[in-house]
Length: 467
Image (cartoon, rainbow, N blue to C red; front, side, top):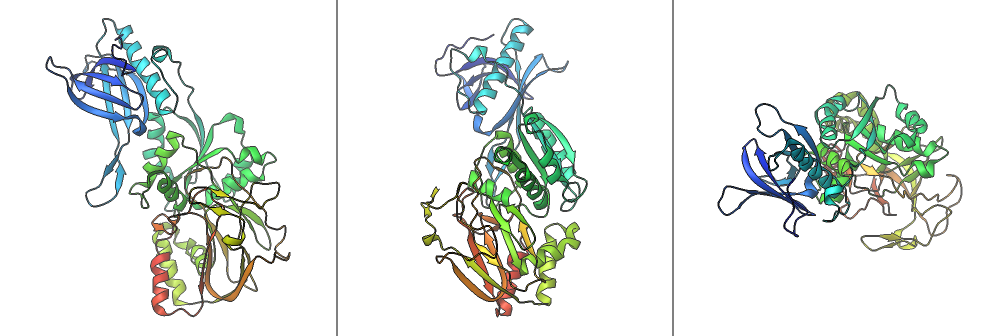
């Protein structure tokens, strides 16, 4: 095995870079892999691989077409700028055949040592010169993957086979696939899941399944522990707003050009983000939400467009056009606690509060729906998140209790009422740039009745992008 003669590098070894069959020297630092050409002349740099873009690496045996028997395969997903605008993650793989040692056992040891060091570094562990040659193998993560084969346009299984399975294999992440069979199945699965047997849950579906899993975890007797289970979602339905919000929080991209790959990258890297849940209480039930609640026009379009689910995102555009053609008004009273009276200090990056109960605190807007049986209530939830340190706050125990004097109320004929918690309300609908995943603020959107045709056309353009 090659020895490291430069204190600036953790490892230095000779390899053959394939498919170019180029004789190179690779050097490992805490942040990158530096590959340079070795040809008897002054070394020329071939490539620098940033470890922040690496999702995994393997040691594999070569075949008769490659002189090197043992190969180090590295999988990289760097962000590349598109020609016109935006960035997209480009998959790159590099195969380095070990050939700098006298025996194959030594070459195998070289590739294994590199793999262990890279695995430690990309998972945030510290590696120093004294231990780099004697690192242990890391235990593979084990995830449960829930797939709804009927979500959206029915492409969830295709997305799993094309993207999820491949990227998990590259990262050496073990997983068990469970297909949901009926509405509410995932809630039952999450409620009964042996959490000690897995390191997290991944959902390949749309809005509904992630909602079921979160509420299933909150149904458990051990919900305070269960809700800290990392949850990831690979967008596979009509709605993918939370996935877009997570990618925006990570990269600053408000419109991902490949949301599936971006979401998988976040999951594989194991990045944990706190997310606030909102407690929703209606006349007949309660549940937990993490994106928004729609009432009136928004809810009607969402519910009534279910019959167009096979159209994907276009279902919302069509449903919106149908609802505009038969315009409705919705009478209701909206009560809310203004931010300046809530005790919350919004400093742009963190939120603090002086109100609370035995739970960590959460500010809620409460709505009193008066005589509106024709108007549905619908929550929208999707994306990828970690629910560690989730915040929950109960404002009151009943919809019929009197509200404190600090609360304000608006009674009107509305077109819609929509409390929003995150930056996105749809995959392509970037609504609140300053919203944070874990903040204690709800952004309340109300559209009063009496708007003109131009405004309703604007509503059509907005809601046509939802999902």
